[in-house]
Length: 228
Image (cartoon, rainbow, N blue to C red; front, side):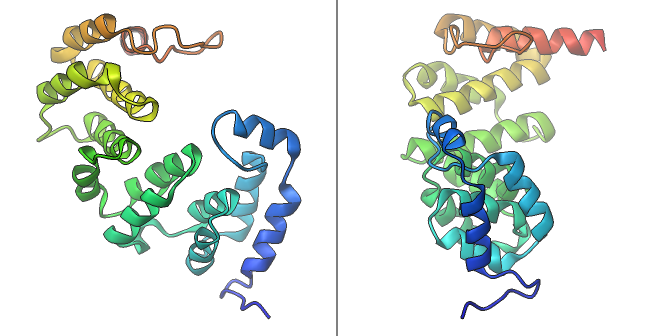
């Protein structure tokens, strides 16, 4: 018999609820983005809201290696309860883009090890791990840039972004855009790098959405700041 967590939810019960939420159409959409699960994310969030924080259950869900279970784990965990080495291992086990993104944004950024992991991941030889380091760097560019070498970051982006693998390239491009948006002294150089490298220049962007092409992104966000 499965042992219940203090809040009364067993791993078997949680997995059964996830199975009920599975939908072939959602799976088809998710698979186009590299995510191998069929759970609608709004319904997943509703389930997490009902379960509330359950750290022990979160660890059990993560250990299943099921993508939907991992996503649920990240929504019901206690970010500050994870150690540095545990988070490093979790990131390297995050096989799909959504699990990777949620782990970085919902857990690592909210815990005490974000800066140490940012530095460790930033130059990791695995480009997916490195992309997490760049995502955390973008966070610092916006919220706490003191001590960052912004010209040095632009040097790296200028030299390596064009040939970087997709997920690393996306993270570096985000950092480029945030430097241009947040730091007027480096805006012209950031725009110039984006224009010359042309990364994501032709990325399909829905109407009324901002293009991820760095020069367009920078100019639009600065325009909004000036208008606001």
